[in-house]
Amino acid sequence: METNLPNVLTLSRIVAIPVVCLLLLVNAAWAAWLALGVYTVACVTDFLDGYLARTWKQQSRFGRMLDPIADKLLVASLLLMVVGIDRLSGVHILPAAVILCREITVSGLREYLAELRVGMPVTRLAKWKTGIQMVAIGFLIVGDVGPMFGPLSTTMIGVYGLWAAAALTLITGYDYLRAGLRHVSPDCEPVPPAEQSERPAPVKHTDPARDAS
Image 1 (spheres, rainbow, N blue to C red):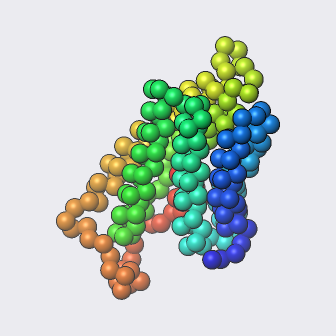
Image 2: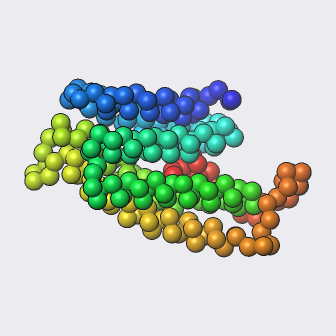
Image 3: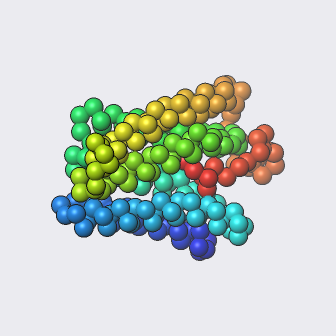
C-alpha cells in the first residue's frame, strides 16, 4: 500500500462505517447527531482524497482500487442500517433497493470494461446523484430527532431525497449500461496480461474512481 494522505483519507472512510452503524443502534438523540457528524466527515473525505491526489500528483493504483470500494461500502451499509432501524419502511425501501442494484451493475460493467481497457467516465448527472444521495442519507441518519422543516420532518426530507436520488440512479444507470453494452460483442475480448503493456488503450483514461461514483 502506498501511504499518503489521500489514501489515508480513503481508509478513514471505511473506518467510519462501523462507527456510524453502531451509533445508529443507540436509541438516543446524541448518538444520532454524533453519527451524522462522523458521516459528514466521511463524505468530506470522499471529495478531499481525490482532490488532493490530483493536486499533489499522488494518484495510485491502490487509491483507484480502494476509493470506489469505500464509497459503495459506505452507501450500502448505511442504506441497510436505515432500513433496519425503520427509518425506511414499506414502499420507501424501493429507492434504496434501486440504488444498491445500480451500484452492483455499474461495478460489474466497470470491471468488465477494465479488461478491455475501456474507460467509463463519470457524468455530471451521476455527480448530482451522488450529492443528493449523500444529503438524503444524512437526513435519514438524524431521523425524528431532527427539527421540523415546515410540514416536513427530517426523516421525510431524507425519504424524498432518496427517491430523487433513485430517479437519477435509473437514468445514469441506463446511460452506463447502454455505453457498456456497445463493447459487449464477440470481437471485444479481454486483453491478455502479457499484451496489456504493449497494446495501447483505445480510450483515454480518466480517473472516475477518484471523481465520484
